[in-house]
Length: 287
Image 1 (spheres, one colour):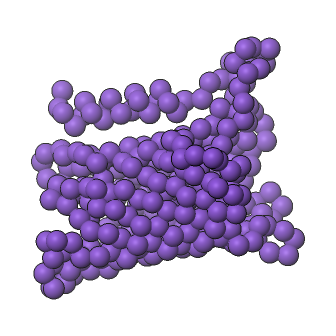
Image 2 (tube, rainbow, N blue to C red):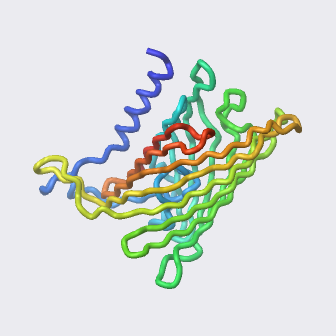
Image 3 (tube, one colour):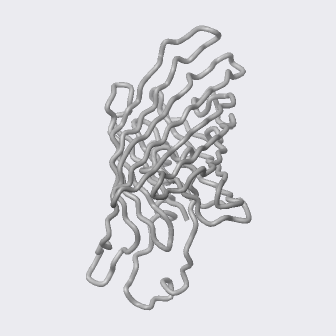
């Protein structure tokens, strides 16, 4: 078995072990009686492929916690991010993402740690009859990934973002805009800046999913349809533009599931431009 394929299988098994929720049995099981409600990280910059956006902040925490992970699969590429969170109040929060990535730029797989992203969110307005939820986010990307192996930028990057969400009837509308400014690294190479955008709709499913005659998967379900895009400006190599600007655009279909054991999401993104990957699949589990 090829090394890249073997690693892919190992990480799929790890993700399934941590991410698959326990089914709910409509009985007085010990698991059901003693499971407490859990908390979830909500900084959107940490998971740009996750369906929908999160404009709310759950209960505050008293420490930095490891509370989730994801899995991203695309053409000759996969990534396994681990997610940290800290919420000192219900108005703002901080989070971080540390990832393991594998890519196949030519004929050989390479893998390792990527750049580390630290970000925060502040809520300006919570949704009411008069106005929607409005929030802002900011972040910094630290060069922990190897630039020579295409696992990182080799320099600091700064991110700014803003989002809005509104519920009209049972339809959930969301917009999220973000911008990433990349600095020049020690090899005199500067990756192009990136403007990202998401616009979409969500709709709740109220009925539980029946797995078997006596097994129901209960919880909050929501389906999403979105457009997600990223416009990359030209990279600059030793002061010379590489003229490699690209426009990624995806049609995203997703589902979210929230229960007492955690919050899970699955998204399928279909590329709409020649610069886009033909597909991307993203799974997320937060506890």
